[in-house]
Length: 151
Picture 1 (cartoon, rainbow, N blue to C red):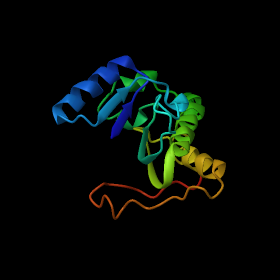
Picture 2: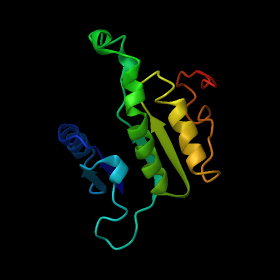
Picture 3: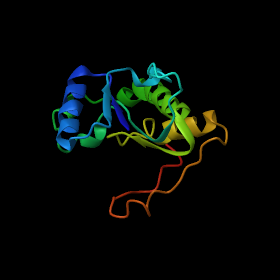
């Protein structure tokens, strides 16, 4: 079963449309704040997931090249204001993860406060309960750069 969630109703409508194309009865789309996603959906048992994708709200500064109008609205505070929300969504995703499961944290930002800082805070919060793995072997064609260690 795949459960897709987005806090934005319009984006959920898009998710429903995309899910219909897959013609699967094993998909559920929710509209809920990700950081408060319930542990159960009335089924009695707590939900646990093998895989969790946290594609969190972000400043979008990684899309500046294709969205030139963003240059006018961009400030260095954009990412700082989202850090707490991004971390709380990632924490909730990790809490819903089954032992041995995998969490992918995703943004379309280049800002280390939205990426490396969130991942570092998440690893610290779970104090050894999560480990960072290199995904290069799993997605070899994905262009990447090493994480920043200082910023």
